[in-house]
Image 1 (cartoon, rainbow, N blue to C red):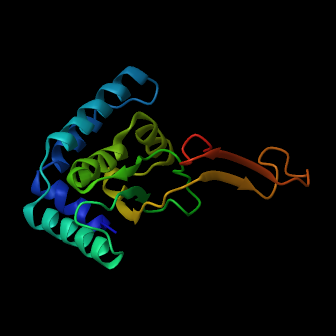
Image 2 (cartoon, one colour; image 1 turned 180 degrees about the vertical axis):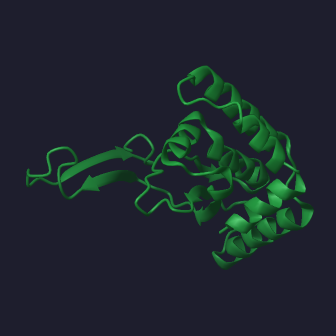
Length: 183
C-alpha cells in the first residue's frame, strides 16, 4: 500500500497545497463549467508534478519485493492500483468516484500512481466533497497495489436486489475476463 502520508509528501514536495486551495476558491456548485475547469487544472498539476525520489524508490522497491516474493521474473508482475480514500467505508460513499487501474507494468507504476491521486479532483469527487462539506485538507487517499490474477470470469453478486430490497433474489452480473464491464 502507498499510504495517505505519501500523498501528503507528494503535495508538499510539489508545493501544491496553496495552488489547489486557490483554484478551489473559484468553485460554485451551480456552475458545472467552473467545476470542470478547476478539476482539469488541479489534475494537470498532479500529472506535471514529480514524485519525490525517496518515495519513488520506496514504491519501486516494494514492487520488486512483491514480485520476488511471488516468484515473478523482473518486470513481469502486473499489478492493480486501487484507490482507497479515507472515509470511503464509513457513512460517506465514494464508490466509483476515484480511479483504479488494472494490469500496470512496473515502468508505468509512478505515472499511474499520479493518475490515481489526481482522481481526488474529478468533477464528481469535487462536487460530492463540496456537497458533504469535506475540505481539501480532509481528503486523503492511499493506493493499494495488488497482484493481478489471470481472471477467466469477473463479476458482482448482490445477495439482495439493489433496488427492490424486499425481493428475495440473488443477482449476479458477470463477464469474461476482468470485471470493469460487469461493475
